[in-house]
Length: 97
Image (cartoon, rainbow, N blue to C red; front, side, top):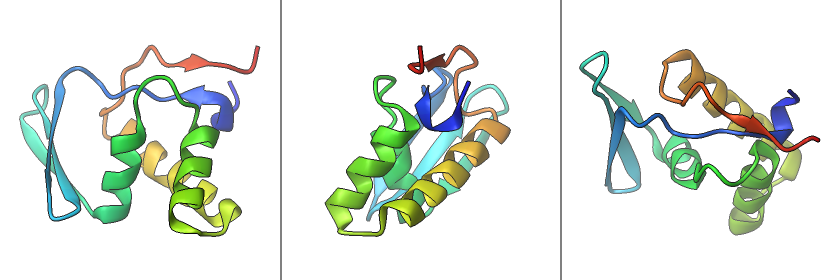
């Protein structure tokens, strides 16, 4: 599965609360909070289970008038971190086919 065509899905055991542009995720499986800065919170908010990593990055780049390549790199890092922390569902799909 190519990273940019992956469709990341937030895990059902993760709740989110937004405050002043930042977010707190609560992982009910590990019983712990995960604090997100404003950039990571925007990435998390864009994970709707329908858009690919590439589409999320493109949307955020347009929204903020930022360099698409840099946004794509930042989104990829955020999603990799979410994955590493077990915050994404294991059954993500790939729209490369």
